[in-house]
Length: 329
Image (cartoon, rainbow, N blue to C red; front, side):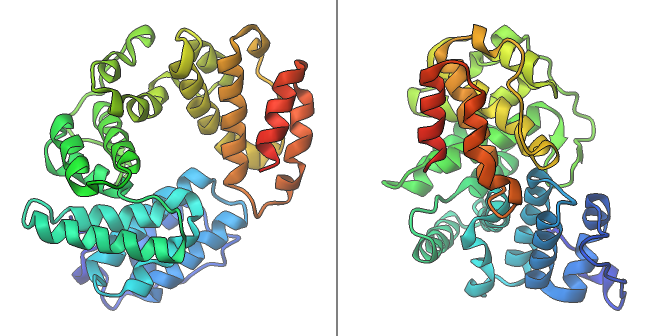
């Protein structure tokens, strides 16, 4: 996949605004020009400055970093220092995911070489950041390269990861497959031409997940939970509560992250959604997990220090205890 057509912008200079003035729309529309003018590392830094300045949320930062990562490997495939810039895992590893996806685009041409490069990259990342997960971006690329053949994409994850943890690759597969079913191109931030989004009844949203082998179900449910997200927290959690056990908890977790990751920088404290206390303990724990994950995306923001006080909003003692134990990590 060619992310930047070099011949289009060669010789074109743009006026680079200060990060306080740059909107997501401006960054997205001019990202190729930024990269050509100031390079990968400086574009990475600029996007991070805009995020830290509060002009874009973590999801938009992730999207931009994903695109920068694609370009980084496309034009600097041997520059390992550049390719491991995001070992600090900013903006949900968007840069790393883009690098991995671009590496995996070569799989159909030379699978052995592509696998070797991806494993080498993972090893280098984990030397810089022990415990870092790998291959989410490869999962995205497998779905794109093999016509959304979900079984084949998951099989390639298993082949790539071998004895290592395949979870992140599965996550990438189901993330991209969800985009495909929604008729959405995550790379270009635009609808897929000629593809209509599918409509799934809420009570059947996980049917395909539950038809898969056990090792794939959790990541499938995590990604498919977004089909239940309406943009409003309470009704979306209510849809998750239709299920029981771990699917209800996982669904609520993902729904809550989706909401809080956008609203937390604005509201600083997310109030308990109406009706939450009427749902199961699994749903309530999923909600706490989701808020915790959203806070973890904004560790450099002033409101992060107030995260423990949020736990006091829970009227049930063991919910409050679960929350404070979680948030003390």
